[in-house]
Image (cartoon, rainbow, N blue to C red):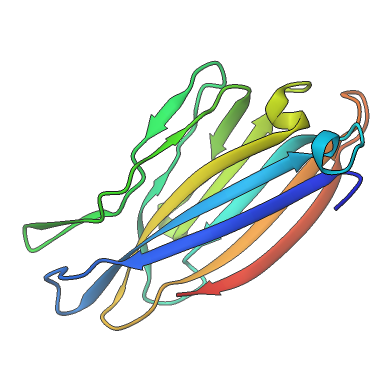
Amino acid sequence: MCPFGKYNETVYAERATDDGSPSHDFWSAQIDQKTVGGYSACGSSFQASRLWTLADAGVYRGQLLYRYGPTTTNASKTSRKSLGLTAEYGGAPISSGKSVAFPSTDVYVVDHSDFSAQRAEWEFVYSHGSDPAKYTCLSKLSVSVRTAEGRRLNLHRTINTYWWRHWWDREYHLFDGWYLHF
């Protein structure tokens, strides 16, 4: 993506074992996404402006998004988010015990998620001139999804990256999308 910068992503998913449900499986997916500004990725003066990312479970019938994170943050503070899988079936709690820290200094997170559409959606707005915009910013997202028993987790992922060279310039937009099956 040079001269703008780079986007990297890793997705980890796991199914809860011994969930006690004869009709459903419970999944948790952690999405580690990293933007690398043009300063360090390409030797250019381009910075990350915004990152709009989506984890859509609603394009697959029979899946229910019931938890996600992070939610909207305050860019002047560092947030700690518990993003692990938790559910309850028949009074018995189910948990994978995962928790991650999400530093939000110089990055403002806007939550556009919609439970009725089974979609977790985030917009990351970078402070111009900040280190996360110019160099590297790692964010950790999470979704928890219920599927029918024996069905695997399926997500549709779309990524929109926006880059700028100077704050008065227009944003340069790059888009990508793919389907994930676990």
